[in-house]
Length: 297
Image (cartoon, rainbow, N blue to C red; front, top):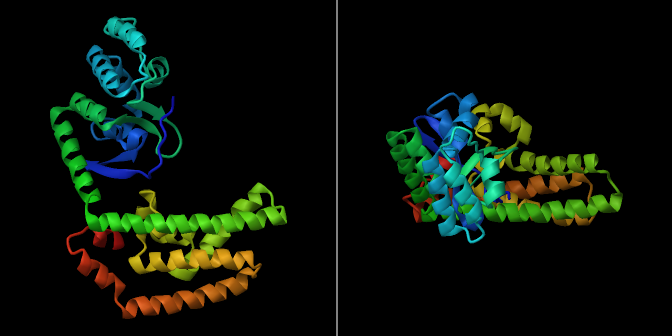
Protein backbone atom coordinates (compact mmCIF):
# COMPACT_ATOMS: atom_id res chain seq x y z
CA UNK A 1 0.00 0.00 0.00
CA UNK A 2 1.55 3.30 -1.06
CA UNK A 3 0.65 6.50 0.75
CA UNK A 4 -0.43 9.41 -1.41
CA UNK A 5 1.22 12.81 -1.16
CA UNK A 6 -0.16 15.94 -2.71
CA UNK A 7 1.75 18.86 -1.22
CA UNK A 8 5.27 19.83 -2.19
CA UNK A 9 8.11 19.10 0.18
CA UNK A 10 8.93 21.57 2.95
CA UNK A 11 12.22 21.59 4.80
CA UNK A 12 13.39 21.23 8.37
CA UNK A 13 16.97 22.13 9.29
CA UNK A 14 18.56 19.90 11.92
CA UNK A 15 22.29 20.06 12.64
CA UNK A 16 22.84 21.88 9.32
CA UNK A 17 21.04 19.13 7.40
CA UNK A 18 17.84 19.68 5.41
CA UNK A 19 15.09 17.17 6.17
CA UNK A 20 12.05 16.91 3.91
CA UNK A 21 8.50 17.03 5.25
CA UNK A 22 5.55 16.10 3.02
CA UNK A 23 1.83 15.89 3.69
CA UNK A 24 -0.02 12.64 3.08
CA UNK A 25 -2.68 10.36 4.58
CA UNK A 26 -5.32 12.24 6.63
CA UNK A 27 -3.44 15.49 5.92
CA UNK A 28 -0.70 14.46 8.39
CA UNK A 29 2.97 15.34 8.10
CA UNK A 30 5.47 12.66 7.15
CA UNK A 31 9.19 13.26 7.77
CA UNK A 32 11.99 11.76 5.68
CA UNK A 33 13.98 9.27 7.77
CA UNK A 34 16.55 9.00 4.99
CA UNK A 35 17.33 12.71 5.36
CA UNK A 36 17.52 12.31 9.13
CA UNK A 37 20.29 9.73 8.77
CA UNK A 38 22.33 12.24 6.73
CA UNK A 39 22.62 14.46 9.80
CA UNK A 40 24.23 11.75 11.89
CA UNK A 41 25.86 9.25 9.55
CA UNK A 42 26.96 8.40 6.03
CA UNK A 43 24.07 8.84 3.58
CA UNK A 44 25.05 5.64 1.76
CA UNK A 45 24.27 3.67 4.94
CA UNK A 46 20.78 5.14 5.36
CA UNK A 47 18.96 2.04 4.11
CA UNK A 48 20.92 -0.28 6.42
CA UNK A 49 20.44 1.97 9.45
CA UNK A 50 16.68 2.18 8.90
CA UNK A 51 16.49 -1.58 8.30
CA UNK A 52 18.37 -2.32 11.55
CA UNK A 53 16.09 0.06 13.43
CA UNK A 54 12.84 -1.41 12.12
CA UNK A 55 13.83 -5.00 12.98
CA UNK A 56 14.32 -4.01 16.63
CA UNK A 57 11.67 -5.45 18.97
CA UNK A 58 11.01 -2.09 20.66
CA UNK A 59 10.50 -0.47 17.24
CA UNK A 60 8.09 -3.20 16.10
CA UNK A 61 6.06 -2.77 19.30
CA UNK A 62 5.95 1.01 18.89
CA UNK A 63 4.94 0.81 15.22
CA UNK A 64 2.26 -1.75 16.07
CA UNK A 65 0.88 0.40 18.89
CA UNK A 66 0.73 3.43 16.59
CA UNK A 67 -1.05 1.50 13.83
CA UNK A 68 -3.60 0.01 16.25
CA UNK A 69 -4.39 3.52 17.45
CA UNK A 70 -4.75 5.19 14.03
CA UNK A 71 -5.23 2.48 11.39
CA UNK A 72 -8.50 0.48 11.47
CA UNK A 73 -7.24 -1.75 8.65
CA UNK A 74 -4.06 -2.75 10.42
CA UNK A 75 -3.44 -6.52 10.41
CA UNK A 76 -2.96 -7.18 14.11
CA UNK A 77 -2.44 -10.95 13.75
CA UNK A 78 0.48 -10.44 11.39
CA UNK A 79 1.90 -7.77 13.69
CA UNK A 80 1.71 -10.14 16.63
CA UNK A 81 3.72 -12.69 14.66
CA UNK A 82 6.41 -10.10 13.92
CA UNK A 83 6.46 -8.93 17.54
CA UNK A 84 7.12 -12.45 18.80
CA UNK A 85 9.84 -13.04 16.20
CA UNK A 86 11.62 -9.71 16.70
CA UNK A 87 14.96 -10.09 18.43
CA UNK A 88 15.66 -13.56 17.11
CA UNK A 89 18.91 -13.92 15.09
CA UNK A 90 16.96 -15.07 12.03
CA UNK A 91 14.43 -12.22 12.12
CA UNK A 92 14.63 -9.78 9.21
CA UNK A 93 12.40 -6.83 8.42
CA UNK A 94 12.20 -3.97 5.93
CA UNK A 95 9.84 -1.04 5.55
CA UNK A 96 8.35 -2.61 2.43
CA UNK A 97 7.76 -5.94 4.21
CA UNK A 98 6.16 -4.18 7.17
CA UNK A 99 3.79 -2.17 4.99
CA UNK A 100 2.80 -5.00 2.65
CA UNK A 101 2.30 -7.64 5.38
CA UNK A 102 0.49 -5.51 7.99
CA UNK A 103 -1.23 -2.90 5.79
CA UNK A 104 0.57 -0.19 7.78
CA UNK A 105 0.12 3.49 6.93
CA UNK A 106 2.56 5.14 9.34
CA UNK A 107 5.78 4.50 7.42
CA UNK A 108 6.78 3.59 3.87
CA UNK A 109 9.45 3.97 1.21
CA UNK A 110 9.05 5.59 -2.19
CA UNK A 111 11.22 6.22 -5.22
CA UNK A 112 11.45 9.14 -7.60
CA UNK A 113 11.16 12.79 -6.61
CA UNK A 114 11.18 13.19 -2.81
CA UNK A 115 12.22 9.53 -2.69
CA UNK A 116 13.34 7.82 0.52
CA UNK A 117 11.77 6.37 3.63
CA UNK A 118 9.08 8.58 5.18
CA UNK A 119 7.30 8.18 8.50
CA UNK A 120 4.48 9.94 10.32
CA UNK A 121 5.89 12.63 12.57
CA UNK A 122 5.18 10.54 15.70
CA UNK A 123 7.25 7.69 14.30
CA UNK A 124 9.93 10.02 12.94
CA UNK A 125 10.41 11.49 16.43
CA UNK A 126 10.86 7.96 17.76
CA UNK A 127 13.45 7.29 15.06
CA UNK A 128 15.15 10.54 16.06
CA UNK A 129 15.48 9.26 19.62
CA UNK A 130 17.20 6.15 18.24
CA UNK A 131 19.76 8.42 16.58
CA UNK A 132 20.29 10.37 19.81
CA UNK A 133 18.16 12.15 22.45
CA UNK A 134 19.68 15.49 21.43
CA UNK A 135 18.86 14.89 17.77
CA UNK A 136 15.23 14.19 18.69
CA UNK A 137 15.01 17.46 20.63
CA UNK A 138 16.48 19.46 17.73
CA UNK A 139 14.08 17.74 15.34
CA UNK A 140 11.03 18.56 17.46
CA UNK A 141 12.20 22.14 17.92
CA UNK A 142 12.55 22.82 14.20
CA UNK A 143 9.30 21.02 13.43
CA UNK A 144 7.53 23.34 15.86
CA UNK A 145 9.20 26.29 14.11
CA UNK A 146 7.86 25.05 10.77
CA UNK A 147 4.30 24.69 12.07
CA UNK A 148 4.39 28.16 13.63
CA UNK A 149 5.45 29.64 10.30
CA UNK A 150 2.74 27.74 8.44
CA UNK A 151 0.07 29.03 10.84
CA UNK A 152 1.16 32.62 10.24
CA UNK A 153 -1.75 34.50 8.56
CA UNK A 154 0.57 36.26 6.14
CA UNK A 155 2.19 33.04 5.02
CA UNK A 156 -1.23 31.45 4.62
CA UNK A 157 -2.23 34.30 2.33
CA UNK A 158 0.99 33.79 0.37
CA UNK A 159 0.17 30.11 -0.02
CA UNK A 160 -3.37 30.97 -1.05
CA UNK A 161 -2.06 33.26 -3.78
CA UNK A 162 0.24 30.53 -5.03
CA UNK A 163 -2.67 28.08 -5.00
CA UNK A 164 -4.73 30.47 -7.12
CA UNK A 165 -1.79 30.86 -9.49
CA UNK A 166 -1.58 27.08 -9.87
CA UNK A 167 -5.34 26.93 -10.43
CA UNK A 168 -4.98 29.48 -13.22
CA UNK A 169 -2.15 27.40 -14.65
CA UNK A 170 -4.59 24.46 -14.86
CA UNK A 171 -6.97 26.60 -16.91
CA UNK A 172 -4.01 27.55 -19.09
CA UNK A 173 -2.86 23.97 -19.70
CA UNK A 174 -6.44 22.80 -20.37
CA UNK A 175 -6.71 25.36 -23.14
CA UNK A 176 -3.40 24.17 -24.62
CA UNK A 177 -4.49 20.54 -24.36
CA UNK A 178 -7.73 21.26 -26.18
CA UNK A 179 -5.78 22.95 -28.97
CA UNK A 180 -3.30 20.06 -29.19
CA UNK A 181 -6.09 17.48 -29.56
CA UNK A 182 -7.49 19.51 -32.42
CA UNK A 183 -4.08 19.57 -34.11
CA UNK A 184 -3.41 15.89 -33.43
CA UNK A 185 0.05 16.40 -31.86
CA UNK A 186 1.95 13.42 -30.47
CA UNK A 187 2.94 13.28 -26.80
CA UNK A 188 6.56 14.37 -27.24
CA UNK A 189 5.51 17.45 -29.15
CA UNK A 190 2.74 18.15 -26.64
CA UNK A 191 5.31 18.37 -23.84
CA UNK A 192 7.34 20.81 -25.92
CA UNK A 193 4.31 23.01 -26.55
CA UNK A 194 3.42 23.10 -22.84
CA UNK A 195 6.98 24.13 -22.02
CA UNK A 196 7.01 26.78 -24.73
CA UNK A 197 3.78 28.36 -23.49
CA UNK A 198 4.95 28.34 -19.86
CA UNK A 199 8.29 29.86 -20.81
CA UNK A 200 6.64 32.51 -22.95
CA UNK A 201 4.81 33.70 -19.83
CA UNK A 202 8.03 33.44 -17.81
CA UNK A 203 9.78 35.74 -20.28
CA UNK A 204 6.87 38.19 -20.22
CA UNK A 205 6.69 38.37 -16.40
CA UNK A 206 10.24 37.58 -15.26
CA UNK A 207 12.35 38.41 -18.30
CA UNK A 208 13.86 34.94 -18.65
CA UNK A 209 12.98 31.29 -19.23
CA UNK A 210 12.85 28.68 -16.46
CA UNK A 211 16.18 27.19 -17.62
CA UNK A 212 17.86 30.60 -17.70
CA UNK A 213 16.62 31.27 -14.15
CA UNK A 214 18.07 27.94 -12.94
CA UNK A 215 21.43 28.82 -14.49
CA UNK A 216 21.37 32.21 -12.80
CA UNK A 217 20.22 30.79 -9.42
CA UNK A 218 21.98 27.41 -8.99
CA UNK A 219 21.68 27.37 -5.18
CA UNK A 220 17.90 27.84 -5.27
CA UNK A 221 17.61 25.30 -8.09
CA UNK A 222 19.45 22.75 -5.93
CA UNK A 223 16.72 23.22 -3.32
CA UNK A 224 14.17 22.27 -6.01
CA UNK A 225 12.80 25.80 -6.16
CA UNK A 226 11.66 27.22 -9.47
CA UNK A 227 11.27 30.63 -11.01
CA UNK A 228 7.65 31.03 -9.93
CA UNK A 229 8.33 30.15 -6.30
CA UNK A 230 10.51 33.27 -5.94
CA UNK A 231 7.93 35.60 -7.50
CA UNK A 232 6.79 38.77 -5.78
CA UNK A 233 3.13 39.37 -4.93
CA UNK A 234 2.80 41.65 -7.97
CA UNK A 235 4.39 39.10 -10.29
CA UNK A 236 2.10 36.35 -9.02
CA UNK A 237 -0.96 38.49 -9.61
CA UNK A 238 0.14 39.40 -13.13
CA UNK A 239 1.08 35.80 -13.93
CA UNK A 240 -2.34 34.56 -12.84
CA UNK A 241 -4.03 37.19 -15.00
CA UNK A 242 -1.87 36.45 -18.03
CA UNK A 243 -2.46 32.69 -17.84
CA UNK A 244 -6.22 33.30 -18.02
CA UNK A 245 -5.83 35.78 -20.89
CA UNK A 246 -3.44 33.51 -22.80
CA UNK A 247 -5.85 30.59 -22.45
CA UNK A 248 -8.55 32.68 -24.10
CA UNK A 249 -6.20 33.85 -26.87
CA UNK A 250 -5.21 30.24 -27.58
CA UNK A 251 -8.88 29.32 -27.99
CA UNK A 252 -9.17 32.12 -30.55
CA UNK A 253 -6.22 30.68 -32.53
CA UNK A 254 -4.12 33.82 -32.09
CA UNK A 255 -0.50 33.13 -33.22
CA UNK A 256 2.11 32.91 -30.45
CA UNK A 257 4.09 35.92 -31.66
CA UNK A 258 0.99 38.10 -31.56
CA UNK A 259 -0.01 36.70 -28.16
CA UNK A 260 3.46 37.47 -26.82
CA UNK A 261 3.21 41.12 -27.85
CA UNK A 262 -0.28 41.42 -26.38
CA UNK A 263 0.65 39.77 -23.09
CA UNK A 264 3.83 41.81 -22.75
CA UNK A 265 1.88 45.05 -23.16
CA UNK A 266 -0.72 43.92 -20.59
CA UNK A 267 2.01 42.86 -18.14
CA UNK A 268 3.75 46.23 -18.40
CA UNK A 269 0.47 48.09 -17.85
CA UNK A 270 -0.49 45.95 -14.85
CA UNK A 271 2.97 46.19 -13.27
CA UNK A 272 2.84 49.99 -13.61
CA UNK A 273 -0.51 50.09 -11.81
CA UNK A 274 0.63 47.75 -9.05
CA UNK A 275 3.82 49.75 -8.51
CA UNK A 276 1.88 53.02 -8.39
CA UNK A 277 -0.37 51.52 -5.74
CA UNK A 278 2.67 49.98 -4.03
CA UNK A 279 0.98 46.60 -3.66
CA UNK A 280 4.04 45.05 -1.98
CA UNK A 281 4.07 47.76 0.72
CA UNK A 282 0.33 47.43 1.28
CA UNK A 283 0.72 43.70 1.72
CA UNK A 284 3.54 44.10 4.26
CA UNK A 285 1.62 46.85 6.06
CA UNK A 286 -1.43 44.61 6.41
CA UNK A 287 0.72 41.74 7.69
CA UNK A 288 3.68 43.31 9.54
CA UNK A 289 4.65 40.17 11.46
CA UNK A 290 5.40 37.70 8.71
CA UNK A 291 8.02 35.70 6.88
CA UNK A 292 6.91 36.60 3.39
CA UNK A 293 9.84 38.97 3.00
CA UNK A 294 12.22 36.03 3.15
CA UNK A 295 10.35 34.37 0.32
CA UNK A 296 10.39 37.49 -1.79
CA UNK A 297 14.14 38.07 -1.45
